[in-house]
Length: 586
Image 1 (cartoon, rainbow, N blue to C red):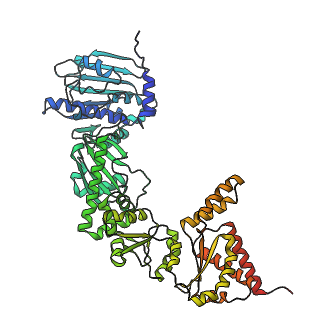
Image 2 (cartoon, one colour):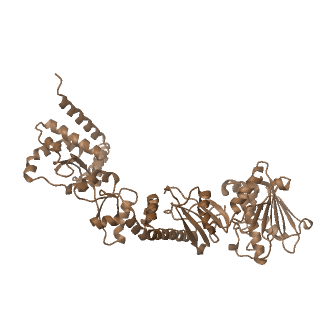
Image 3 (cartoon, rainbow, N blue to C red):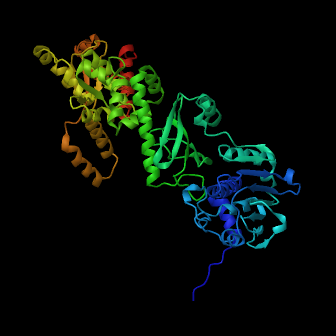
């Protein structure tokens, strides 16, 4: 036998207050929404019908209640039973014969939100040609309906809230004025609270002269620029305000969203594409759907298409800025280059804009990729910031122009450039590659210095480092420690092999033998006077200490991490050289 579900209204109210609505303040929005929909319904049939919403606070009513009156369509007794006493019915709008998109309401549970602040709700309503009907609802689920023809003559509805003992503050005049102004300031109907108008501001983007001040009032900043937004498919109009200071790309941007000129959310997320974290927008839409709580937009295909369209309009603003005001574009990129570079990761036009306008760090000074290509042809780049710091100056001394692509997105942008510019040539440079640009010694010099190199090699063999003697500029640099990703991996592999058990050591040993040539290099500069003197030292022990000292100095100057073995070697070489300098104790 089928049975009917029993509904505990107190439980429903608790669910709304703790899980659906963020705050009891939404009761004002829901009352305004119902009033607006009732007026819209009446004016659809009678365009000349009055359109006004009046809110009387407890200091006006005199009995501690709050009363909201509208000049809308009203309800018959049958409709009162059908709509006010049925929880979860989607809406009265379709049943009244009107298209859903003309109305704000979508879920039919708005009146229940009033139980967040009230123990009793009274609805006195009258439809055209019918008697007035009084509905009384209580938080425990009871309700009653009676005709009250003598109490009401005009068409419309009055909703009276009898406050809960702990919720009187929500119904006081200052609170209601603030909330009614927040939610209803842009409504096209007259809204009054205790005789004070709170609506009529209109859409802010219709007053261009006041937009900067409006942005400061709403978001707390004076915008760098204002971008008009319009998406007809979703009935959207509005503006985007460009932040004048850098924004955190990881922070979710909040936007102010109105639905048919009623405030939906002050901090709605997901309105703009993720890369557009440099903008905050205010929009009004008639077609996008709200969530059940009416505090965010529902994620569907229309919202996704709208987000893409808004992204296209922001992109178009950037392209126009590049064409008409390169100086302003430069100012914008100085602040928000991360957002533009993030967009360039998948947008060809933005990639070309970055190539042409965003100056990157190189060892020949800051310049755009377009200028770098024009001067040097091949774009050589270092993918890590520390690597560029290690080799940038030395590479410049060898006549090798190098781009620092160690900042976020720069490597990916350079590597994507040939996809949109077929003539672009790129080459990734690692520190280990730099040794090929150094000059080899004359054959007779190299032969004479071979014993020194062998002795130096024995000093650093236990560290997995190869010693190379070359000549390079600047001569003031005595040594460079060069490594590659494969050499770094091999070194980490060897270090790990020493810490694990025999089984894993055998596995790692097999991996390590796959490429025994992946070793870091200590390149000694024969053009440096100190290095030349070191190569002529007859004392093997002193040679070892000097090479170890040069190794440690190269690690420090190159900002390389020091392993325990490196720190021990550096300490030992320092003490050994100091001991040699002061002589032995008698």
